[in-house]
Length: 291
Image: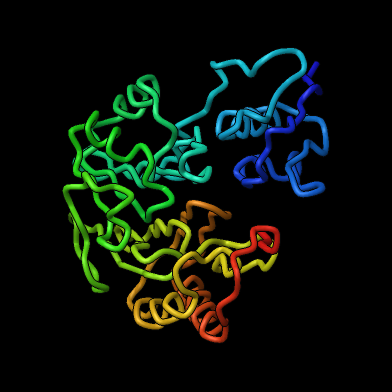
């Protein structure tokens, strides 16, 4: 018989990571996540376990006991070349992080999960991690520690360098930089001064908190209510950068992931760029944000 004793405890910060992994099972209710139906099959149980092991506050729980460590699915393959790290950290605002496989069998880490030696062992067992790519200051926690453990280069933009002052690869300006074969950094100031998109193989866009797929809108979106630096700068960044971007996957720190044909994603970017250009500054208001 399947377990039906899952629940979300009161430490939930409404970060959305669990809802991304267990849609239809965990939903937002009253400003926080809640389990809205019991698991019906093994696939449902797998989704709940993924949510439990991603949750930064360990709020996805079972009354009968803690989730079985053997059911931890992370790192979780999203396709042949990208894995979701899971184990989101409270110190990175609960952001998602990723591993990107490279043709030589090495890996790059984009933003960081919570730190532990056990997790570092697990990621490192998949291949040598050559680079840790930080998308912006909010996700920089643990970056130096992972880079030191892996002997990897640590990347961040100068605009957010204060969050990772030990970074040994500092991006500057607003133009693209090829940081490895097929991998480009595109500075996109707006959400923060040093926000960066990392594009790989003309297929993957690791977007940090700059853009994401909105379930509410069914479209690419920006976190207009949670823009720390300047919505006007973000509009200018998109107008300057979007025409040069080519990708199929948007892989954000917060918000849903989505894969579309490149032509459809380009049209989504054009529409988003026009919409953001009409936005005006407003106070940060987490309660106004809709995933």
